[in-house]
Length: 84
Image 1 (cartoon, rainbow, N blue to C red):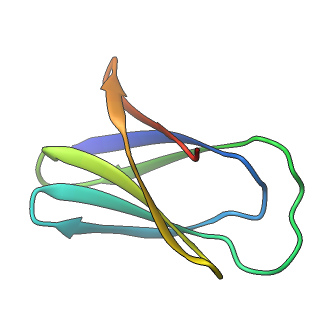
Image 2 (tube, rainbow, N blue to C red; image 1 turned 90 degrees about the vertical axis):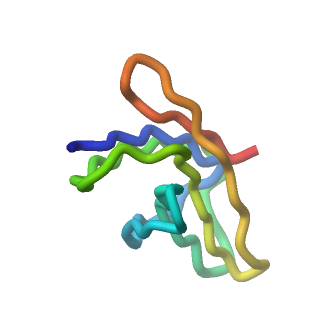
Image 3 (tube, helix red, strand yellow; image 1 turned 45 degrees about the horizontal axis):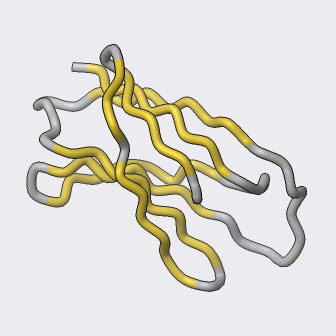
């Protein structure tokens, strides 16, 4: 099955690194490295093929300051999340 995630980041410079399972939770991993980024909302859409339906979907954003985790919600078959 295909899982689609639409996520909004508050700064640019974000790269998608992949996805992994943590139990029944599907984790989408993104990374922002470096010192200066454009201060503009940045939308990303990612689709991955998985073998089972996730019970929960989260976004992990890895930065120099650490890792931030955001839970996604489902609307019309698409998971959505935003960096706060």
